[in-house]
Length: 148
Image (cartoon, one colour):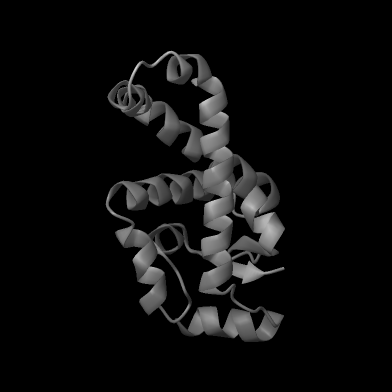
């Protein structure tokens, strides 16, 4: 813990607010949802009832989760930011390098992010009680979300 505090102070880094992280989350999920709707548009439009529409979406569960992992892995690895994070001016850094997470760290973070979503967002709730605002996926990947 002291190491994190020392890095934040030495580099004059400010942690992103929970509000900005939540807003980035909503923007990213909206983008992924629109993309998935475009992919499955024919099936959704041809559904004859709400139940059938829900069934189409449920059948696409693994594709949706895979898309989320790919989206978050790619953007965090390449830019340190997803589109949502770019909009709200926050980014992810690897604690030990103070730079964009490498590919393996980005994959780890994306997978645990999806796991947190699947299990009632419990992993995200951790950030509300953590001094460094780290959610489960930040803790497993050893990352921080900071202001740009």
